[in-house]
Amino acid sequence: MGTSHQGIAASDGLFRGPVRRLGSARRERRGTGDAATERQALQQAIAHAVAGVTALMARVDGEAQDILGFQVAMLEDDALSAPALSTIDTGTPAHVAWSAALDGEISGYEASDDDYFRARAADLRDIRDRVLRHLAGGDAAGEATGAVLLGDDIAPTAFLETDWTAGGAIALLRGSATSHVAMLARARGVPMVTGLGELPARTAVLAVDGGRGAVLADPDSAQRAQFDAALEADTRARAREERFRLRPAVRRSGERIDILINVAGVGELDRIDHAACDGIGLMRSEFLFRDGAPLPGEETQYRAYRRFAEWAQGRPVTIRTLDIGGDKPVRGLTPEGESNPFLGLRGVRLTLAREDVFRTQLRALARAAVHGNLKVMLPMVTAPDELARSAALLDACVAELGAQGVACHRPPLGIMVEVPAAAVMPELFRGAAFFSIGSNDLTQYVTASSRDDARVAALNDPSHPAVTALIARVARFGREAGIPVSLCGDMASEPRHLPALLDAGLTSLSVAPARIARLKAAIAEL
Amino acid sequence: MSETAEGSVVITHDVGLHARPSVKLTKLAKGFASTLEIAGAAQGPWIDAKSIVKVMAMRAKQDSTLFVRAAGADARAAVEAVIGLVRRDFDDTGDGH
Image (tube, rainbow over all chains, first blue to last red; front, side, top):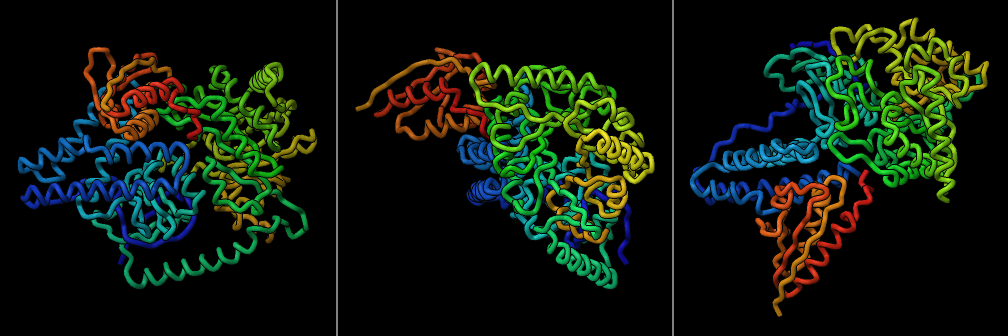
């Protein structure tokens, strides 16, 4: 009988499949002892790696595409394989020769005193491991589908590189600090469980229940049948929910609820049906600011924001200004060595401290606002002064653009309500054009517990009465003051939290695109 | 018909000869029949501008001078093209989000 293990729910859904261990690139391979065969094996593995990365490029965009383009160029350069090939000629197996050659290159990058070059070491490691996987028998991460990825943690790139079209799931032993991946998993609808602690060493098959945060290791036939029945019921429920996707969300009473989407990149827009949402409730501008990459200029940002504005065709697009710091470091921008980054210089605190960076973003936003119904939202607002200073800066940018003869429009400026100080006293922020409740951070700060720490994750509960009372308070104040209020945290996509949110009087929710149908179906019942 | 040409240009790109600029430079270089080499100093060492592995290994930074030389039928055009690309900041509008 298989053993059942409890972890933390990170992304809904059921999936059963063979385990693929993350980070197990150095699989066993024995050399053939023949230099000519080894040479050929390496050249073939490189060709496969090139084909794999090229195929992957078609599925990503922007920065990710550039990184992969760089990897292809490196792989196609004979200078990369030449040292390995000459070592092979002296009788060394292909995988040993390749590892040694690439390790040499990698240490060269690691030794650089330049952040940008040092960051490329990760690409070289990726190249090394990809070729090693092909040498060991083809099965490269990201190309095969329909497996449960199992490991301590998973890098965002590893998630992006995986082709999820044929299903799959993620099971992590540790509480992942990169909840970035959990966000990606929810957006794609990939079941994910974190913080499992330990699993039997030779687990070959995992049945993952993302919604319950539980997995079943090596289920026997009875357990498989039971799981598959649940899966089938879930599939039926999803099919039923799908019927609601393109309809407006309407409660039994006839009350209409606006459903907007949370997005983190331009590429996501291609996968979303226009008609399924009432706009973009949260666009995370951080995707433009990659760690180790140069800061994006005004023109780059303008073009990106403009694409969102145009995509929405007049529906609202709320773009959150740079929200880094905390668990989202960007070298050269975020402070290093903070003893408690979640209580440190992050969100609007950081952008106000880096006026150059903030101005560039605000100018780009004001220019993009000409092309649609764009709104600007400040993260982590704690004191009214932060809103006032940001508003003054935005006004100054608009005036400056006007004087330069550049087309621009002053977008409405609203705030995220995620710091308890703002949620307790929303009346301090009458100047805000709108409030958007960030339930993830609000819950974390109100309950003083991180959802990334498996030991306290149970306390991180958005349905804690203290959290729901604050949400109701903000919604009530918004109604009285005529300030629109919406909620854009993960709480909105959990049907079990819906009654509390609707009771609080919220009529606008923003969720990951993958949750639209389920949410609308649940609203129709209430 | 063989000719030789050389020139130099200051790298003004934000981060120097980084991944994206290097991909562009080597792609451009491969389009010429001539041998095309670059160096971080007038006296070399010269490296093959068609090899991204070697171009990246130069780790050329912003504000450093890039020396270019070529030999072959289209040497002059090749040197001009490389210098033009660096001058235009590698056509890097940063539209790579």
